[in-house]
Length: 554
Image (cartoon, rainbow, N blue to C red; front, side, top):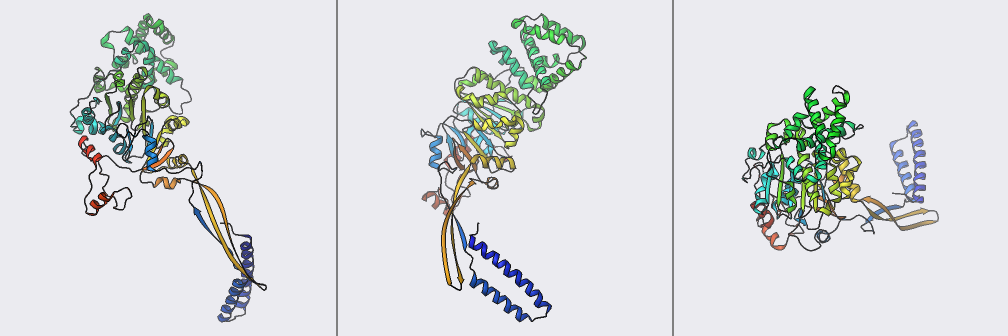
């Protein structure tokens, strides 16, 4: 608060008086003057100040106003109109609380571990009527455990890619067996794009490394994997068309390695592409640092195929990614937590090939629910489909625990996901500073108008004078500060620029549980039941309980 000029003058005068009084007191004390005289002097000084000056006082008051262009919270009616302009609430995707969205959209959903992303967002989407095909990244296997039966009952063809047998370990009750998937069948299904598809597999196996200042080794190892894959498909018997053959070939040495390259040199398929690549590798001394480095990277990228369970699983194919665009498939890609560090490449491979298939033959809607998406590491296909997938009827839901997790993987390009997401959400506040600050900035600023009233009076030998005044000032403030972001109990949601806080309601909870009878959204009948200690029925909750197979931990 800024003091008026008269007040500042008064403060200066008081300071001088007090300074003089202090010096006087010290002298009086040295003369051993009585305490009564001290009291007299203090009283006299007080009366002098009171009569001579009365400081003007300002009382600030914030006036709630919304200025044009300001950030502000919308009403529930505005929010529903934004998400369902056609009034169709039964044919959309779940965005939390009791709200769905029928308009096309990509979504970025941020929330720490245990915030409710799965129980409040992913699972409800898989318990309501599907709008097309779904591809679900299922860490721990609980998503398929809970929702696979519901998807099958809705008429979906359900595939659970679970070669670790997580569903059996959890005791799943849906009765759906794990499906096999051999990416070689995908490659051969699209012969016109054989070279590109082999490179894609090499790319999924050898992801970009964040902060890598010398991408040569990664790029050359991809070229080696792609070339060997092309040779396996075009120059080897059918029974050799698998990743075990690739695994062994990349580990040949001495005569075995030379003989493989000589065979490849005789392979004239694809306009001699394999032959040219073989000659390049033949020209390298096997003991040279260059060839050793390239092979070392390629071997590390294919180490996951050492697993007998994975090799057996990939010998057969019940699932064909090209069927996704038929609009009636639900695919769960399952991985146990303990294998996330060692087998995330498997997730990249499956998710990447599913995206490629949808790009190649677009048709009906396909939605990708990528829970814990940063585990996939950097994938150009995800970035591309976030930006351009709309034209191929592809929707992307990307889930992460913090914005820093996305930035670590995608660098400065991570904000492209925000730019291309019609819906951006933050679950249950946030614990880390970067996420809080980012969402505070993303929500924008409001203009606060402050009204200040001042009043005061002064007395002098000429008499007493009074004065009053009113002034206005404006200042910008965040719609929510980072500290407030961290304390929000709900889902901060930005949909097409409209800002709203949705209740964080897991699928297994009745919306009326622990609700105050004074809640504004309750009708009179609901309030009457709650006053009697009766929880009203919740139709959506009852549907979820009917459709869901809840894990034992719930």
